Image 1 (tube, rainbow, N blue to C red):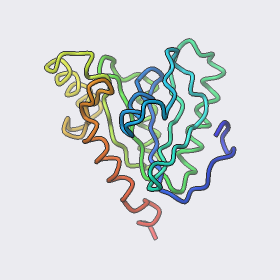
Image 2: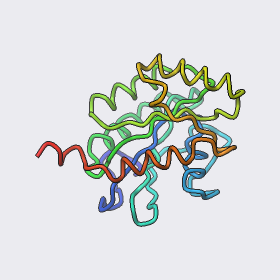
Image 3: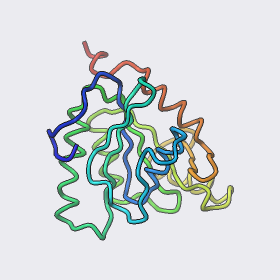
Length: 192
């Protein structure tokens, strides 16, 4: 999907979207999660994903890869185009069951991250928080940083999944959490 309201695949399966800053390790996480080396394209240059990508997973659900946000080397005009695309999808996807919001363990949440959390809260989407690249720090330092990030976001540290695409740490926990979103009833059905 390249533009808000543009073409997208049929929505017969539940969808779970993955969101995060450019260079947060989203493509690597997606590949590790589904145990495929090249489902999502991994680039050495952040900000390459400029469209929304849809991946059918085992005829059970659709994994949705949203464009990364906040990368400084992409023009401000191009970054401004992504927000309506991402927001349009999040507000208008009837099969969307939830979002996995990614944060880099080595970085404090940016204004863009906080705006995304605000948007997800405004829409009322179930959100999993996953902290990536925990292999880049010692176990103790990573645990301390995850706790600090959780507290800054007003979350219990037990609500945050620590993940490493390199070591596979957190993969099974994240897969289980994603499947709980897939099998949950859509929010719209609860209101009827």
